[in-house]
Length: 371
Image (cartoon, rainbow, N blue to C red):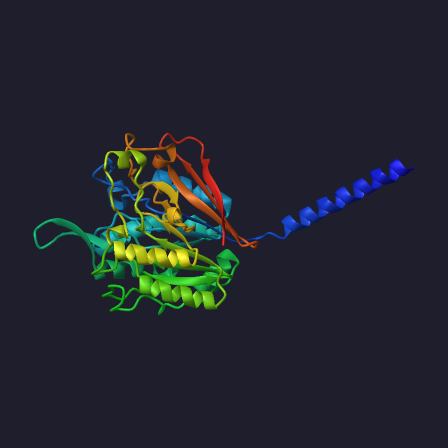
């Protein structure tokens, strides 16, 4: 009899413990689910394009596959980190054609519950020109900024449509909340180029890293003020989306051969360092494009820093890293980040991708950030 009671008691304790564990896990919910990637445009100098492809200059094969797979994951938003078109033009006919094709290729997402949040890239806002010495340069121009708003402005931001698509409320959206002319090197209207908003306790800031007159930069003064206001409203999770990165990824092979490059706004070290001070202060996660690869890092880890930079400029543009210089397979894969903000204060990040042999998509890497 005693043995029977002990067994029954053990079963009751075991079932109670299991129920408590299940209840505990059940309480952890996904507050917001988004994906992010950038750089889907083709490079006509490197890729032989058909007459039709010359019109839109898009890696359609990669982009449409990504859209299908992202659609299957059912995220609430896609933050696309620039260079969705080849651009480099102020001709409305050329730019409008390329924008229209990209929007058509991604429109299925909006129809099935994923709101598209566009981030300006250098191909959208810059043109090819020459400096005073005749040296080729790329510089942002106001005409391209205007074309950006004309083609993407309806997405930046429509609160009613956002709620219909994502089933969440967007708040703290104000078109006037943008870097002011005279600050951060800003010389032109940056509305709908740099902007921000809240979803629940998460704050999302989108920044233009190539404003007219101050290319390769970040609006650090505006971002610091924007984050401070968000924190005062109760924001706990901070995310920044930009085209250019603060820290360019150089493989170990590149470093060993002294082929180190600064390809983002790290060419302006003072701006980069101030920007990363803000990222560390708020433990934000910085998602970028521009470099056509995937790489995640904690740039100040050696100094005790914890903030993450995640480069996902791997949406179809020509690989940035040659086969000879690559350290790992993901250096040359088409990939994107799948991110879930959880109710327990954690953010889960998973990187999915496939290579140019078109094999099955795989999970490349995953980790959790505690906010």
